[in-house]
Length: 410
Image 1 (cartoon, helix red, strand yellow):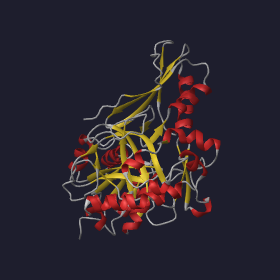
Image 2 (image 1 turned 45 degrees about the horizontal axis):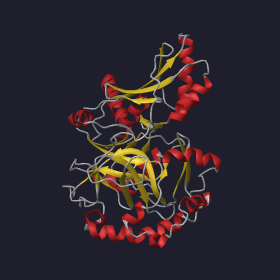
Image 3 (image 1 turned 180 degrees about the vertical axis):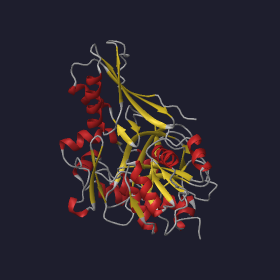
Image 4 (image 1 turned 45 degrees about the vertical axis):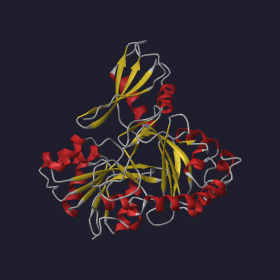
């Protein structure tokens, strides 16, 4: 059996580049059929966009701007030309940002990443990404089905039921956040449940530090990470070489200087910008707000596409916590609902290999009932649970920062 999903992965890099650049003008033209893209790319001659230099001359579209653009012109801000009836599913992610799912096999390009992690036809997969409104569960589900892997659509949470399902179906592989896999394994230990059938894992949505990768390996679980976004699915994925993440086929990744659209030199950290060549849902120079860097050379695994170092933080204050993006405007919404409070700062830390979210609140009134009310608002706005910590009025820095990512990884 081949180590590669298909022949595309081992192509000569020049052949791949010629293919991507040859298809790029058609995709830009298709994108410009949407009114907002036509305005955004005003004056661009699509047929002239035949090189990375020409692509880099186009303006970036910032993911952080999408909530406001979509609110002004629902549902997609005018950036999608296809009628909604032509899509398979319609999603909303925190922000909110609305996304369509294309109506063809493996629309999120995850099968390739799963195959690189060792998933094969017939392997039963426990998928714990959410199937509720957001595309997360379907991104991995569609790839599993493309490979011929039966999927248990477990979703997140309900650990006791997860253990029952594992006992009954004996899944070979797990997909979900690394944090939740750790929770499942610890719950199984406490309950005396055998989960030794799990041998592979593809994780995303949270950091996967070497310490956690090692902890899984010691339990016989070979874990790999993927970098995926709700707009176009899997952008890059880890391989057995364990040297960066290989960029997915049909995706063009640029690393640019944050706040600009200017590509940086190889190895320099910058903001990830993606262009998707799916003609049914083209995306042109979407700036994701994530930081990474391009690696030189070809992966020792034999895949010849470009590689990135992986997720290296955020170019803005938007922060991914437990697989969900939390944005400054969401903290502002909490403040709006509790006008009696002073400054707010959402602090993200890492404890016991899991993300922890704490909202620090300036308040002269500090009682448990108020803390519970604020925590309920935080959950309503962000869809995540977090602690509330009262601090004296005027004690939080007046530096404009409302989200502080203080996570440290081994």
